[in-house]
Length: 318
Image (cartoon, rainbow, N blue to C red):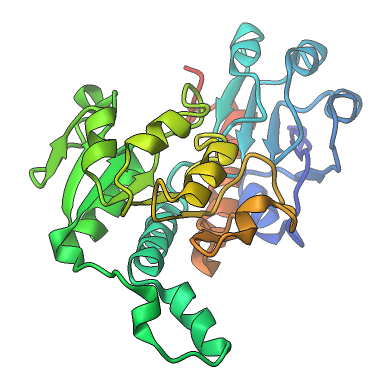
């Protein structure tokens, strides 16, 4: 058997030690490439049956030029850089790793929720500037008397809901796929999006980007309570950032925290960063030392299955 059936198209990690260890058990040796463009993928990826991908763009043109390709598996959950319709047209299965950082992302969403609700960053900055005065961060409300609204109740949204319940929040959710996913728990109330926006004190976004571009725009931000907070750890582009800046600047909502942005890395002159009621983190929600290991192991295992023609676990373009 040809050992070089698998290639890593691009990767910003420091090494591929875990991937190599996993693939060696299947008698496979991954080739580590440095593809950034369509042309790079077309020139460097011919002959491989399975590709592990991070950022390089898989388009119609790429799939058409790689007739021997069977599958592509992404480092992570999202597949925004892959044309799924083109992949299906060319009989290429696209896979992700949906469960490597579920707890981490849910934890991060709760950390941002608490930081906003308890005014942690604002109070910290006051103290750094020599001001010891809790009244400057009024009002703060009791969490157990507030409502969390969760948009999207998949793995991560469900995990976040359990954390919200543990803090005593009332939990309302919106997910158009709720009837088929069966993730509605007895402590959840399922409502339409407009109702969720009106009722929730904290809104946490956990839906996919596909079909939800600019889901939270100025009109929807205007429906929220002026005392409400918005948290997005899902995907940049779901929340319209220009609208969010305007809403925060005008006081339509009390604050927001985002781990993801439409264009990353976020530039230091982004107007959102000028606002005291906005918190940014650097797409770090997925990260822990354990989630890193899980991601690299699982992506390699799926690539091995693809290279050897075995059944895949996490196909997103069935």
